[in-house]
Image (cartoon, rainbow, N blue to C red; front, side, top):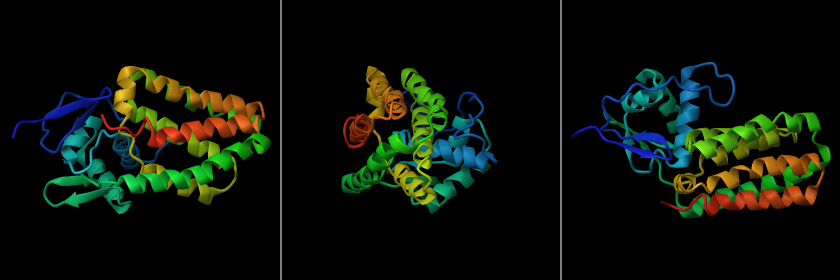
Length: 242
């Protein structure tokens, strides 16, 4: 079978049949400093999975994915094993890894739990968060906007995760952050590709800056409104299939 490669949202998605690929740039540092390629690759793979760059039911080989990220197959294989432990992929002997399917009901349940946690917690930060700590999140918010403008879905998802988990961390409850982080890993945002191509993803990205401004203004109701609208996208336009 000849090599196959599809491009979605400006980021190549390589199937199990993919072989030689053009030289790829070095894997970017995702989510801050990482101690190994394995962790960096795992972050990138999770983001690709959430954004729909890796599709349910498809089998991806470690060498093909390694070509995408410009690293050797070993850290990719190890990272995929980490994702398998998390239930995000299944191993396929002698072939690679198959992305686990998630039902619409599961996605609805994940989003419901997230809304119960994130909306009141973030709204409460309008009263308690240190302005300096809030401003420290502005670079991540700008990264989200830049990624949306560039159509870089993997960078968008990674920066979005870093922003929201960093924001929740200001509430001082590490277990809460862990729970939301796990729910975010299981999300599927297949509508991002079409939104990026149409330019509509940029308006959603700018909500992160709007949220920060509302928090800094100590406007709890405005924060609640932005968060309610923002999380609504998860099962709305961000989730719509191409």
